Length: 418
Image (tube, rainbow, N blue to C red; front, side, top):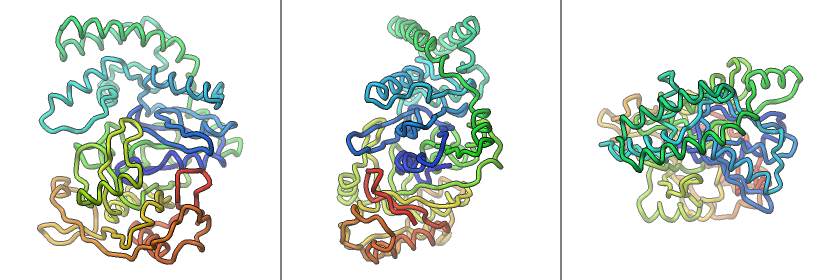
């Protein structure tokens, strides 16, 4: 499985795309259309929000697990766009019967909640949180329910009534909810074609001796239990969620590759201990193209956080690391890594369980010499500049995990295997 080890946007889409070549089945197991995986092919770029990026390989089947909350309209637009661009996804995409559906009123509730909140989370407004709320409240609509029109209509009507009780009975809101309801029902008729038992497909694929790649969304520090709460997403982004969100047992997973950038970024609100000063922040954002794939929002940037990397390795049980965007640091005369946090009680080297404390820490940095050489064309570990190799070795030490691959550009070919 592939897991993000920072605050999302680590470049998981590219790593999944590269590793999908060796898998028969690629499965997305959590999150929703608030995630965006960007993959650069030789002749065009794809940004995928719900369909796994393995779809860009012509012979792979891609599944959306029960842990995902699915936006039907977004999913179908994405599917049709892939078809129009020559990817030919027919019969290669399946959606779990148990995946919960994002209804139009969920998006309205999401925005209303953010607008009224004293402490802004920085939601994408895609309805993800309210959909997970309905799931946990045992009142959600699932893909399998679409086969039963009476049940579907009842759940939608009850949902609209709840939304009105929160939003109010304004005429424009009421009209919008009813119009959106009809559009959703039109999409749902088509969505039933994709319904499948994802856990069974995985088990059968493994029984046939083929490999399966599990794909997460967002990042470890956005996990609703283990992340920087309350500035988190509404699902479990850590490795333990993969079994639950895909319908298999945890002993079926034999490797967990964590993806980290050679620096750190974050979209939305919440603490970022290693944040750059404004001038450096702007420079790295431009060099790295650090704008959200889903919203276009600028990402906040900072130095590599070794404390977070060590925590991510532990909480996910990592078996290896993939480092992305090493090339973004090519022109810097010095690079820094965070080795600990200074707190009022002294220096700590482990991610604090008290997240109020996290917002008050000061990073402890170690300076390393920059390599001041381009790495975009390098394809072997031995050919990397010595300073770049020293930097990567230090990341391994801090994360207590071996590096398996390094990305030095957006293209499939720009990968160094370790």
